[in-house]
Image (tube, rainbow, N blue to C red; front, side, top):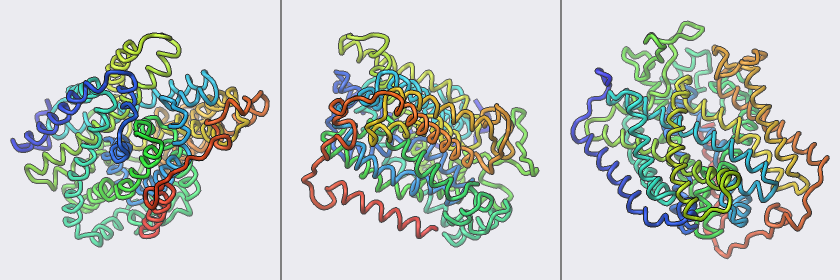
Length: 582
């Protein structure tokens, strides 16, 4: 136990948390009877309505790395963090709804790696399954690290106990009810996060004098970093030069690295979110799922980024800053090259919550953070157990077993995934912003994978040999670029430079965006070259798997019910937000 916790919760706070835990576990055990087959356990029997899968599609991504990580990025990069939504999410969500869900849902593949087997071959599927399994473990570990750190700070629990207890709650309800339990809890967690953070934003803005007061304080913070005054409150200001904006990347690196490679690589190929759409009850419902999720997604910057910006504003010129410094192993504040304390941005949102919320509301806010943790971790665990069981265990270890055996293995994989995630949680402590680490993992895994999918779906000439070698080469290209570069002020190690330092980037995100570009480009080039040198599959084997050889889905719905109309409205609203905060 930490004898000096920051928060001193009262009985009502603990009651709020206890009720939430009871409801979450109750949902899991109430739905355990619905998970009698592997299709029930891994895909919810493909029976859920689109509003449920849509909110789960969003909430599975709304883990601790988003709620805490985006708050951290809001404090570190300002309103430019909104690019992760308005550039780095919405366009890709529209694309997967209109163009890619017909392949996923129509092929009846049980997972994204299984689609790769149908389109290419077994070795491509296995490579993707292995890399995806590793990625989900790291992503889940990041959520666990964030919550363990939060429990230690707020409640005085040791980090180790916090991680194990929190993981046990997620394990219990996923083990019992499978994907259906995870999805319905994700819907509950979505509303908990929304209701928990809306008051925080309102109180926070009032505390700094509204948007005008926030802008004035952040102008001071920007100039102290050598940036233009409005760079923390204008998303596109200074994007013509990497040195004149807080992210440290020019507009091309942002649009190509985040808006195209990382964004499309995540939303279009990551089974974590695709699995939710595949649980829908029809093709039309599956296509609507990402579009329904896109509506609240475009508004979430105001819930998760603004708290970090407010925390930074309240730290400017304050004797008791909201954001504390990051400490080294001896407990002393870490200092950057300029002699300034390195702020622990991951604590921006939690510390603001403690500073502004009274008793009772503090319990609600803390429960919202817990909800974000369980949402993100449950999403990763359900994706991991599906890919492990179908694409690794059933394909290579135990073929031809009964459905009951694979259901048992799915539950065993749930336990194994949680244990491995606990180990990954300890790696996340090397970063002062967990979102930076998460984007780096995506650059290694999702960036080359998106190149493989894009070529596979829209170029019938691509072959299994090309896809396999392209994936390998893309990941290797990411490793080489990352190993030859470093963010400014970093030392060689997990942040790069392990092969030597040929170039220094202004920030971790700038390095990650270009790592993603290197991975995507390498994968494209190698896949094309090898595919042209190898024999393609005949067209009759690719029907339903390649865009040009697949009948276009017909939707009898009208108005907003039509995916194309819904998508157009979403894109127009997103463009308007970019213009308002440009």
